Image (cartoon, rainbow over all chains, first blue to last red; front, side, top):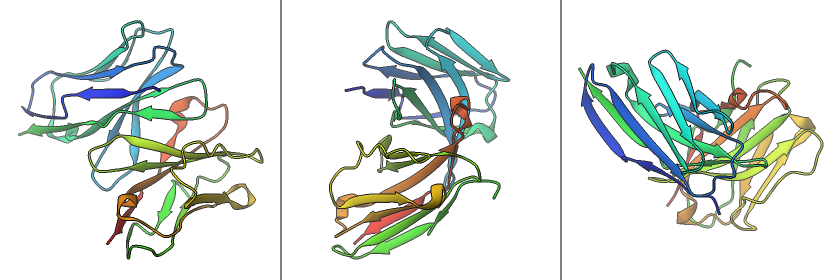
Length: 111
Length: 115
């Protein structure tokens, strides 16, 4: 059974700092991996998607990497801003209908 | 509508009562998903509808849970004889089949509290 773990569970950083969020998964037979952002009381917003054949994806200040063989992904956020404060969720899509999510990292960027 | 709409946004119910949660997906989206998010845990897959195909119910935790999707649009998740462990946020998502996976659009969820 696929399990997704995110470390750390919570992170508080000063504005402007670069930071890394970690995601690990137990079964490397994945179709793709996605990073989502969740704001309080709102749904999920997809940030980046990495296909199983890819190593990384970039969008603005965000960069996500994937090491499928070791079951790891990282989300790098450059020059963090208070508006980046949210819960970040990692999810893997297996060959089927569902995404398997981690519990998330709660990020707080202090101004 | 412009997004996935879920109602109610909050629901408090007494243990043993039945509840119905509603999801209005984006018009034209053929795939619809229900997930459950318990405190401190990741989202847990419940059920998946795709067009007129038989739904994938593999994530439903017990036979107290059921869901239907009428006319390929609105979906209702029903929980019978609610228990305290059913307390969670129930999220609905929709997408167009064949669309890049980040075509998932999630609703804001229904926060269910069983007292």
